[in-house]
Image (cartoon, rainbow, N blue to C red; front, top):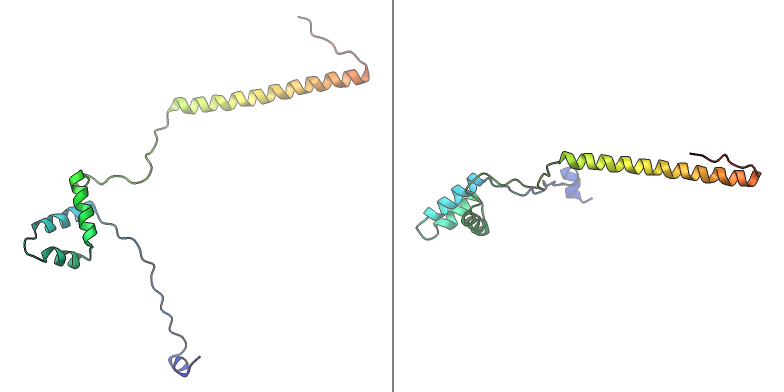
Length: 132
């Protein structure tokens, strides 16, 4: 530690906040594009961008979005499209689980019968056969 640091009471530590991405509403974008289109004098668009803290790429992107009609209505929902669950799919999945459960049960029963046959063969006792 230097003499100066000791005199100041330790190290000066500056903590900066993590930068967050700016989000602009559709209304704000429309307002800025309208103002930029209304600018007639040279340098007026630059002054507008400086005043609002924007980049020219923002204005270019928003003008293109306006031409595509994306700034006309309500904002588009972000994220994956929600799938509407079909009750038939739910019923089908339930039936598939039930079929799987019954198949496993049948396989266990067949394995038990085979085991009983092998035990009877080892012991020399005949199994009672079904007569129908």
